Amino acid sequence: MSEIRILDVRTLVPAERHRRIFVTYEGLAVGDTFELVNDHDPKPLYYQFDAEHHGAFSWRYLEQGPEVWRVEIGRVGPT
Image 1 (cartoon, rainbow, N blue to C red):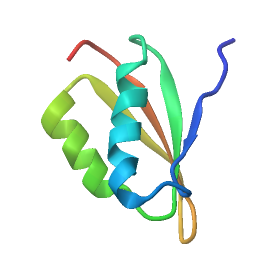
Image 2: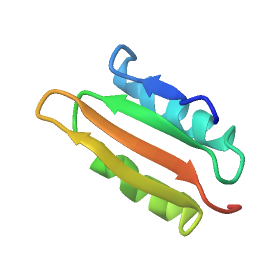
Image 3: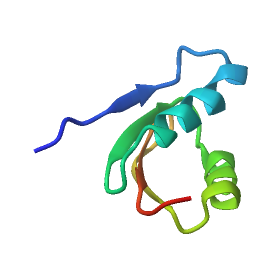
Image 4: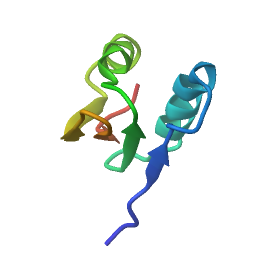
């Protein structure tokens, strides 16, 4: 059983959040996931993933607000 990776970006300044999320994603092996914890719906991030990694990522909401959003993001193929 693999360790659950959690990236809580709520304490980061907004300008740093997407960079940190994509660095975490790039560090995943195919089949690995991490859990993103955010203070708002990261739907714009989904669209950025889809534009940059179309077909190579998974996205599953675990919790949808109103105060905390948790999303499981995975690498399902090469980009």
